[in-house]
Length: 113
Length: 110
Image (cartoon, rainbow over all chains, first blue to last red; front, side, top):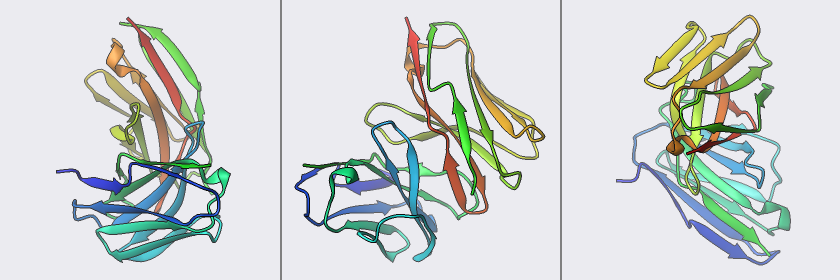
């Protein structure tokens, strides 16, 4: 069974569209994250949720809105997509916010044309 | 916030040689330092970690050292194999905030 699964794996869309990426973890973890990895492989945290509550909200445009319906799910919705949003988005989870080890999903490659 | 610097950005070694990747961090409150390996098309995966109350940790061919005073930590891979080729990331955790280095692309030539 996949521990952290995210869908879709690939997403190609036009500028201005709205899209969502979904993430689910079956590890029983309390904390989930979204990271953005750009073309130079730099991993930058975007959001972190602990038990459905937002605990980290980096300087990310308002067009990005995370939603956590329960602690096993953290979805990312992006409005009015821009070329610069093209990246690989990784979902991750950890037992708690400060225990350390992150378990990453396989990534969702978003291409904005 | 925490700032993690990682060097080198690329590293090429012959199979069987050792590889060393170094990271520095800025915030002395950081207390957990993991290393992740990312293979092509995959998510990063934890390979070894160290907490601030330990100076060195080893797991078979990989080891990590931590110098709290100098705020730097290093990954050592001995007897490298082609399957070690990947991008490696260091990270530092302070409270609930994990910050990553920029990554090192390691290539092991057969």
